View (cartoon, one colour):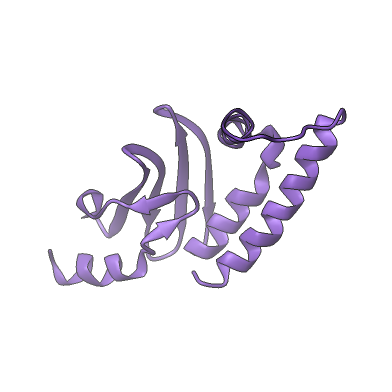
Length: 133
């Protein structure tokens, strides 16, 4: 690994959102560092860092869900996370169904209100977690 890729990989957190860094995916080309974050064996995020910006691509089942570009990784991840309410995000919808199917969960009549409350709690916990980035 070159000196440049070694220093950049130190800037990449070992975990990002629901993914963990795949060290084998880290590459440096033309001054841009790209890395994948995995959930199990699935790529959930691809991050590209340059001198002036950071791009995050989010994937589900191999298809891109969205892309966010900001000046820093922290800003890009925060903006990306907040750009789509969790109750409209297919990944979170799948997660909610897995939780409901796997555990005894009481679901009230107003599902949308429940999902909004879960979303609010998730945003609050996510903002606390971002402090560690």
